[in-house]
Amino acid sequence: MGAALSTSSLESLSMDANPLMGDGVAQIADGIKAHSRLRSLSLSRTQAGFEGLYALSKALLRTNSIQVLALAGNGIKELGARSVARSVSLSSLKVLCARDPT
Image (cartoon, rainbow, N blue to C red; front, side, top):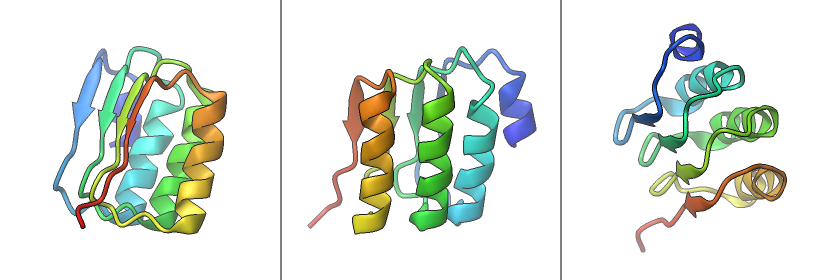
């Protein structure tokens, strides 16, 4: 998935409610590092876990194209939140949705 994403002309990708787990989200993160056209990425309810969030936060530091990121419903814990927050403050991200239902 990551290799295909890095060569595509996609501007928006929604993988909501797919059980990607940490490894799947990490593969997507690997693909967006070199993808300059992707503006919106939605990974809500994907069971991203810390592994996926960490990989995604590293990818956000390497790309300035993503402006909208949705991570809602992933049960983000403190370490994952810290990782994403650090990247958000250094990226071009304009909208972040990370709310979990209560």
